[in-house]
Amino acid sequence: MPPRDHGFGVVARRLRAFETGAMPEAICGERVKALGAQSTALRARREQLADEMEEADLPAPTPEELSVLRERVAEAVADQTVKKPGSEGHERYRASKGRRCCSRR
Image (cartoon, rainbow, N blue to C red):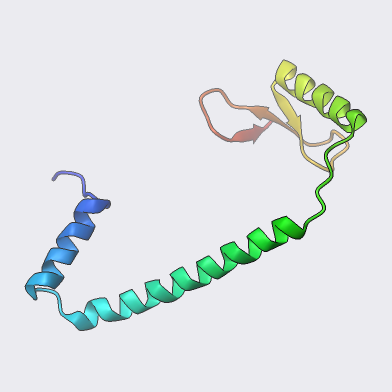
């Protein structure tokens, strides 16, 4: 069995079914209403976040903070481990070759 196309092919088939009457309006209507409400909520949230970003006081890091960060990054790259934020070095994670996430060592 060929892999299912969950992208535009599926949407096109469903739209065709709706347009030809093979899929009743009642089935699509509720979903379209739900998606419309979700879209409206997401737009409102995006606007809220944009307003918060404009109002936020986000100072640039100081030269000292940048220096500390550079040292931490260089250390992590050198030994391929990263300290868990907020830990005193008790929990360290080692990068796993070929994997997108890290695993505890």
